[in-house]
Image (spheres, helix red, strand yellow):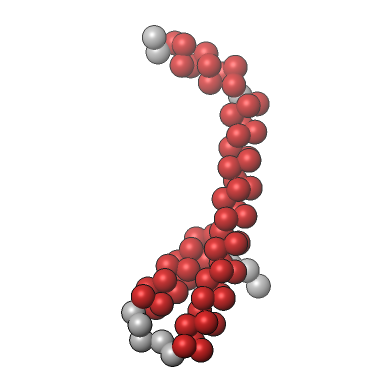
Length: 73
């Protein structure tokens, strides 16, 4: 079961710290690295989805956003 984005990112950050510590066996390092790749792919996919949602929101509301920016000047 996949965690949410925030939990996945925290786990990925911990994996990076573990790998950088040089305290893991080679076998454990490989396992952590593989898990890290899975988490990276998941996080990248989630970010891409939300980036698309933000772009859609901005496009759907471009008239309102433009009006608000024009009012400032």
